[in-house]
Length: 94
Image (cartoon, rainbow, N blue to C red; front, side, top):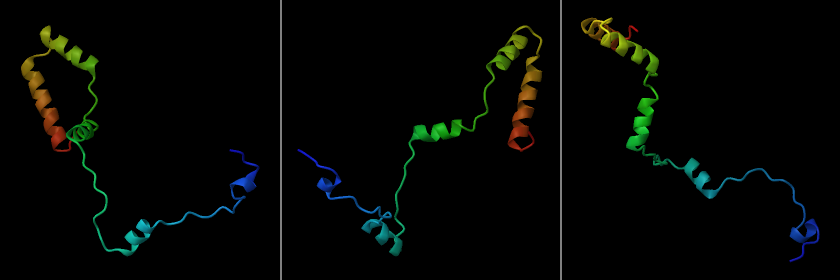
């Protein structure tokens, strides 16, 4: 195949603005409300929930475990503090 300049392709043309397709035009004039639908998988929902979970600080957890193991953090006090914090977060206080 041999092409000899732009004339061989039908010549240069003026740039045209975008055109609407028949489907878009029909949808604008229609009163139908059944558009596209999206289904989110269980994994997608789980990822969405995990996005709102606070960051876990592994070093802080290790420090607390060591204190409990060494007897420097009485378990009853730990449970009370954890419960107070959870309650505060649930009621919007912290």
